[in-house]
Image 1 (cartoon, rainbow over the protein chains, first blue to last red):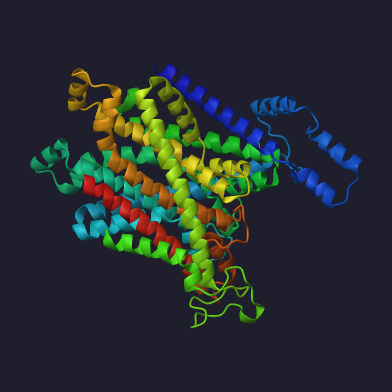
Image 2 (image 1 turned 30 degrees about the vertical axis):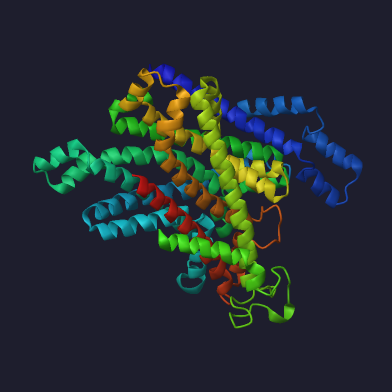
Length: 301
Length: 257
């Protein structure tokens, strides 16, 4: 059963990645021009030099052969070289992946803790505070990241004066947003769960509220939050782009943005593959965690 | 519901009445009036090129609200049609959900960026990109909601009495999913307003240079210390629009519970 499940997951991962690469391949080549030719033309290179460079990158071959080459390269784990700088895409990706993982990962851990604590505080406090917290979360979560980022940047320029290059500021923005999201999900599921029969039973046994919360309410709420976060963490890897641009941090999102705008084919393909793989990895991990918390969900993994 | 609705209506009216409210053109640069603080001539001051911030805010708002509204309508209509079709015709359901799953695994930002590049350098491109980017999530949500209704005993009873799928969709499912449709439409509207601003902020607006809230914020952030009004005006506009839309959605949803 488990083997079949894993096989299915692998198949789905394969299809998604393949679809993603194909879409990027076709769409980027459907648009005229690319950075390689543009750079050479700008520097006044002769037609022969340009033709030689195009040939060197294999861009003169028929489209279907280029496509097959791209796919074969990817299976071998190489992505070719960047059209704009000539650096192997694998090397470009390496630095970016580490940077993105550090940013998103630390923000995620911080916000899980914050969300858990605030949810516990809200659970105990008066309805008016609960509504205040809920409203604040909803607004923070739905504001675009660059909005929060710009205000934090302004605050930093005028009072805080944290060095621009540090990861502290971008992580703060991501932390605020993720806390908003996790907390919203947690609060919704907490409200539903507090009315459940098994919770009422635990309370009527005379168990202290913090025990009921920790043992009977929080795990179930965490399941719902985990499945939401599994999808969102993946999305965040790509959409941290405005935070990366704002704070000048090199990450996956800004790499992909630049590559797509420049039609740097190989970099764009590599970045998309890495983002889709990470996305699938996160949502799979989230599902494994859900099952670990609640074994009854095993068949739905 | 009164306050958020009032804020939204006020914003829409102000943006529509832009030529009446502000005598300035949003794109007219005036080197003699650079980075001026709010005054009686320039209610919200001027930016680093001497353009009137209020005029840019209002004309930018026209565009943002129109594009986001159109994208939201596109997303909502096509999702409702797709879900209805897939509830009635099982064959459609298979295709719709396979495609929806594949799209959902794709980070939204890339999806929108690619669609935008293909759809062309026009506002129609943004509308298509932002709208279609939301369909997969919407369809999945509605399908789950409809599934819950279909599993209810009274629906089973109705089906056992000989009610057709069309009839069930028309009566029970429509009534049960309506609040979700309204609420999620508001979520998408808030999200598209934010995305539109993000596109402007990142400079991938297909019409660069045109007044847009996110782009205004991006340009003003370099002079934020000497001219904070340039940042605060578009920032409050974005926050106000998103907050009111989202609040209205929550309240509509709550009324139906």
